[in-house]
Image: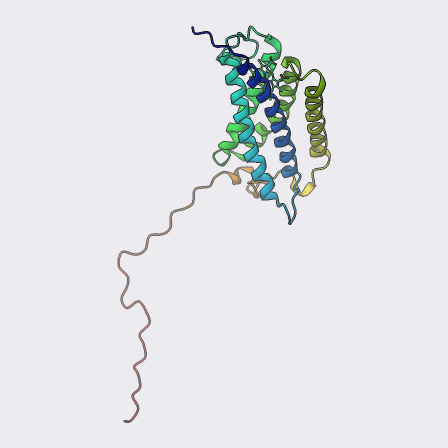
Length: 230
Ligand code: HEM
């Protein structure tokens, strides 16, 4: 196997790990705004939801780069399997293993959101709860594994992310308006009599085909024009 190691891979792992953590903090906070039905005339709920979704994609991109540089850097004995399966990394087994748990949880949330219109709303909601656990495990991983996260500015960043998401979680659980209960951004029918499954992508019934030949005449007969005397 070719040994590939350069300090730049390591710097990239550290930088992308921090950026991913900050982005997931923003994603979780925006998700709370969406769940608690915040949005007004200047920035509407739709825009907040779109920002939440777009930022989640940027966050996942940074996370993928973080994992790629870790695995490619042969200085640390962490292979592809260790990115998904906990406790398989020879390097910092427990700390990297907690990172793998975070990755699995975030992956589940992300994939279920991509398939949102194809799965039952209750299933999507259940899986979306994993994001809180995903963030908590990512935070513990960052603190335990990181070179920068245990002191100085790195510690301030990690502690701030923890504080912001803790406040968001408290507000989500205690400040959610009752009118929002059981509903999600794209499922306005979730609490109707038909139940949560009603929000599943319902196939649109095909339009009735037009008759092969139109009965003739198509319009009512016109009354004959009365001619006046010339
Ligand atoms: C949601 C998932 C993850 C997030 C948010 C995350 C975030 C972070 C953060 C913030 C750091 C600290 C950077 C520093 O202080 O230098 C870090 C370090 C690290 N992460 Fe992750 N990580 C995640 C998943 C993973 C996974 C799955 C792996 C394994 C492939 C991994 C491998 C590493 C390694 C090796 C370090 C140590 C870098 C160093 O030596 O400083 N991470 N991560």
